[in-house]
Image (cartoon, rainbow, N blue to C red; front, top):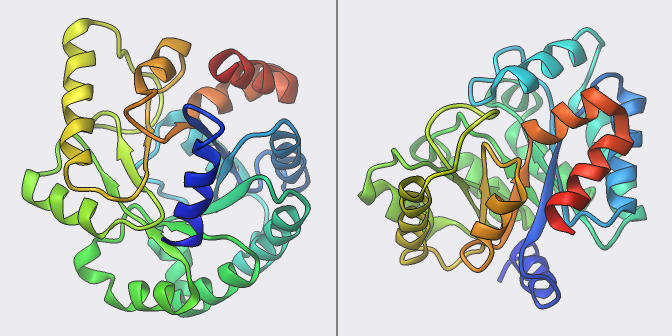
Length: 261
């Protein structure tokens, strides 16, 4: 079992479902994004998915796209980001940081170097949504050599044979996108939609030995309750960013407490 999967396993002995919150590094400034991450860890979130911004974040909806573009008005670099995240990881050992970005900035930084530096800073998982696993042999080898888990994504539109392949190769956790499309507003109400999501997660579970995280469109307590017992991690992205934009850190923390008690 990888370090990341072991952390999830241990935490799941204490909680029915874990929380992962999404923060865009550098939004609205580097200092404020780091302050927000620290507050989240102080409040006891289990994971922070930190997004290093890119100009064309194709998996993201309007809220996160706008935050990325605002962040990129500053000069950001991956090395500084990793070092700063490492300090947070050291100060808050009860939480974990997973770094998410797109292939372009990480490829420019160097995938071998990325895996090595992530390991040195106790960042145990990397998410690159636009890197197909078929073209990721070098990246996978670098991750394996450094004890890092590459986190793969599946969606309801993923063909069953490919879903089985990705789920079978997952190690730290598998990122299960709850619906087709980009991050942001979504309607999960309705018995038929609930059943479709349940069937989708049940299908994944037949192939995956790794823990399962579910994200995209989560913003209500009922959705978290629906996932309990069917997934290990509920991932909160655009809803948390919207709350933060509307009322700062306090409003964001209120949302987390409302959703996860």
